[in-house]
Amino acid sequence: MPDVLTVRTPTLEIAYESHGRADGVPVVLLHGFPDDARAFDGVAPPLAAAGCRVLVPYLRGYGGTRFLDAAEPRMAQQAAIGQDLLDFLDALGIASAGLSGYDWGGRAACIAAIVAPERVRALVTIGGYNVQNTLAPSAPASVAQERAYWYQWYFNTERGRAGLAKHRRELARLLWQEWSPTWKFDDATFERTAPSFDNPDFVPVVIHSYRHRHGNAPGDPRLDAIERRLAARPPITVPTIILHGGDDAVSLARGVGRDIALFPPGTEERVVPGVGHFMPRENPQAVVDALLKVVR
Image (cartoon, rainbow, N blue to C red):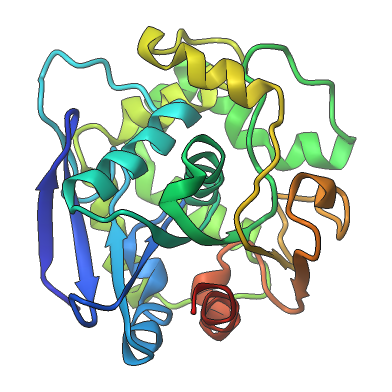
């Protein structure tokens, strides 16, 4: 595994891993919940071998990433994760980069492409247009989708907060199994990532993320303008490939063409068969191929 480096932004000291040549085309890979940089162990080396400078940060609340100010509220609304990504690029002096991510990381990548398209060379979004409207309550989803979101309703209770704090590893492992039912990971694979959940900010960050999106926790007033902009579902204008896991058991509402009008004309959308929610782990080559097609 590569050494873990750190860089300071206005809010965080972000831990990250770096692969490839310093003068290569920058590509940032962004993990989701509950995961960490190990998600891209099969993606980063081939990209580096192709000449890219690959950067894999740990999101706020994960691994070695820490808040600079002990008094800073441990918020993790979507606008905060997107701003963290732009701050990360600024701190490393990167004018523009290719982006790819899934779950929280895919949302951050989409938000960066909306808020600062000049900073995004190209985008591979795993899961499609996953930007949220946090200003208005969402309509009930299908019964199957509502059941798949059980963890979100759990985290919106104090029992859920206590349960996450007490059973974070067991809960994370259960979600891995449920969300990617055909992925047969072993104990060693999970244990390489599980220490990232011991971050002292993990529980408050996760709880805030899932409460804010459902209107049950306040947001950061500094991010209100971004949230208002995102609520309007603005289009993404940078070159993009959309990937979906054919067996993703948490994002049941996916569908080719559903949000294609929110992407540039000619955007390619692919469903990867036999892959669940954790595509970079389950089929890293699908992510590599998509990135190399749009980034170079």
